[in-house]
Image (tube, rainbow, N blue to C red; front, side, top):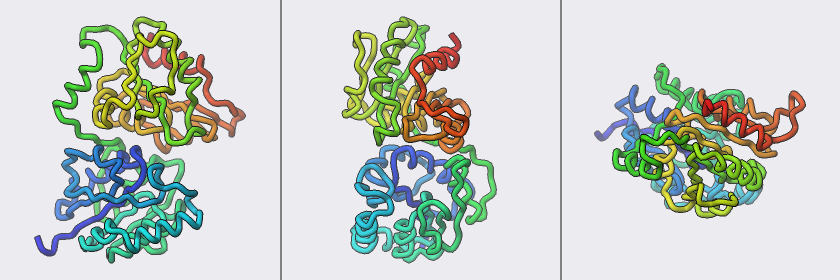
Length: 344
C-alpha cells in the first residue's frame, strides 16, 4: 500500500523495558490496523519479540543511550551526548530508519537522543515524554512522566494520540511456541510431582541494585533443605557462580544454558519466582506467576518500585526510607514471605 501510514516505536533499552512495550504494540495493532508497526530495539532484545503478531517489522536499533548493553557513560555526560549524536547522524541503522519514511514515531522512554532520531528520520508526528530524560520539545505531543504510575500504563497513554481509547491490560506479552512451552516443562519434574517449583534469578544489571550473592546463597541453601521444593536457577553465563550452596545436587543451575525464550518458558511452568529487579519479574508478570522482587541498596522505596514495575501477583521487598526502614530485606524475612505465598 503506497500511502499506508507507518509508525516507528523506539525501545532501544533493556530486556524488561522491551517486554513492557508489548501491550502498546497490541493496543495499536488491535485498534489501528491501517498502521504498519515497526519497533526499533537493540539486537540483544530481538528474541523477546519473535512470533509477536502485533509487529510488522523489527528494526535493529543499537542506539548507545539508556541501556546496559552499549551505553557506557552516565546519561547526561558529554560522551553520551557525542556518541548519541554520532549514532543519530551517521549510523547505518539511523539511515535505514530514515529511508522507511515513517509517518508517526514514539520514543517510549523519552530522551533527547530519541527525539533527535525521530526528527532526523523526518517523522512528522513525533511523540515523547516530558519530565524524564528530555527531548519532548522536539515532539508534537508528549505524555508526562510519573514515577508512581506503572511503566506500561504510561506507555499506553501514547495511544490517545492515535485516536485509540481502549482498556488493554498492562501486562507484558511474549508469544511462546507450543514446542517452546513443552521444552520448558521438561526442565521440571512431571506434573504429578507435588514439589513446589521455585525459580531463582540472581542476575541484574548493576550490583548496587541487586539483593546480593551472599544473601541469595543463604536463601537458596535454606530453601533447598526443604525436600518439597524444586529449585531452578536461571540467568546469563556470568550469573552461574552467584549462588553457592553446600549441596548443589538439590538445585538445577541453568545459568548460561538456556535462551531468553527458554528461560521464559521455564518461568511459565513455575509456582514462584524470586529475583532482582530484572527481566525475570516481567516474565513472571506475563504469565501471572507470583514473584518476589528483592531490591538492593540503590532503591529507597519498595512500594514505589512495585507501583512502577510490579504486577498484581508480585511482591517487592526492600527499603522504605520514608517510614524509617533503611535496610534491605533479610533472608528470614524473604523465607517467611515465600512460605506465605506458597501457602505452606
